[in-house]
Image (cartoon, rainbow, N blue to C red):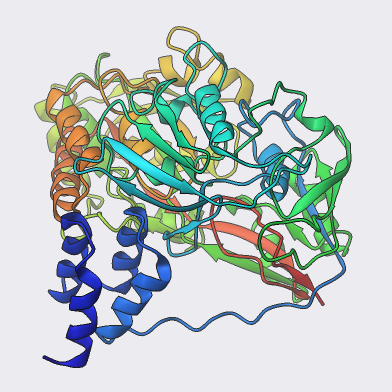
Length: 551
């Protein structure tokens, strides 16, 4: 037996059947190094172990990045937080960029979508993925000196999963994890007893779910006074509407932060942020919209980090309102769109083409053999005729004033005109568009035709459930399809890659046929930094500044 097979055989003896199936897929050539590392990390296998297996079959490790020099201050320009900062309820970038510096998650996604242990050392599922056991890191303290223990994890997720609370994470945990489902085994072990089996659960307690930072069990609110956490920085000062500063945490459990200090400056709009970066007043910005990217892309003093993202602009058509009760009309509108023009023109090439399902090219389970839907005006007109709408129809598209969305709405209006659909535009401020974000009190959820922004996720679970299952709280298309609901259940509970891919392929094909929503493109995330900045990890979740160096 060759040496590398002996190495792999020895390593496999203590693995579960599901864990061994990932190795089988690697050995059979069904998955590559990246997919193997990602799937194995979700199952709780360590990245060094997975890397060793991949290297044993000839798939070498990527080169390590050079470490920056310690010291100095990193200055960041971000949006003004949307209100009082509370990790349980916040939803805006300006808030979570601050919290990410001081508080931590059980695990964190990396640029290749693998999961890295943080406050959890390891995790593993039971046979069907209905119970996940997390082993917690020992020797960790909160900034206030309290020891980090299982009680803090239980209290954190009971807060987030409380249906009577105001948690923003209920969009993730509804139907997945209930209050009381997080149970202490001992001081450094917790079990998550899920409402339904889930093969990707660790992402739900990672930075991918930005409300899931671990807070002390004693947390009662008033977060802005302390920014309590276990992270590499501690609060120095916070002034609402103005800014915040943080200093290195000398008692941090892990590798100490490189910068001595962080300064955050708040800006009400993106233009002042960009001007501050150009003038050298700040070193890094949070992500900027595509429509202003040209301002910095040509600046020799600025580097723009491009991160492949699963964020998208979801165009919904209400399946319970004429003319969208007829799927031929929905298909016709989808066929009217020139997606290459959207990617190359509107997005300046910084996006991936969408195929009318949440399965972005960046997701490993996406079936890339499903043919891409392309513009076909002749077929679209035939469908309109068959639906009895050869003379077209009139409709208002309601959307929000954000980033590239107004430009997308105007281009869609022009595309639809070619097949006789006369679309008028109603572009609203974000507060008016979202309203109370419940049916009957939200232009987003009640409009017959609309475009909505969806932020990046490392797995498609939220995209598949909340906006598209029959009882989804964000189901603006009012789409009800029992077959789809069953496929999503199959996908979510699958621990095996083959089962995930089979369900994903079936979902992609069903949504192409039904077309309740249109996914035209997935824009890249653009993060501008000064040329003297290094070490910022290119992840779509947000800014992590502890390894950043300013030369």
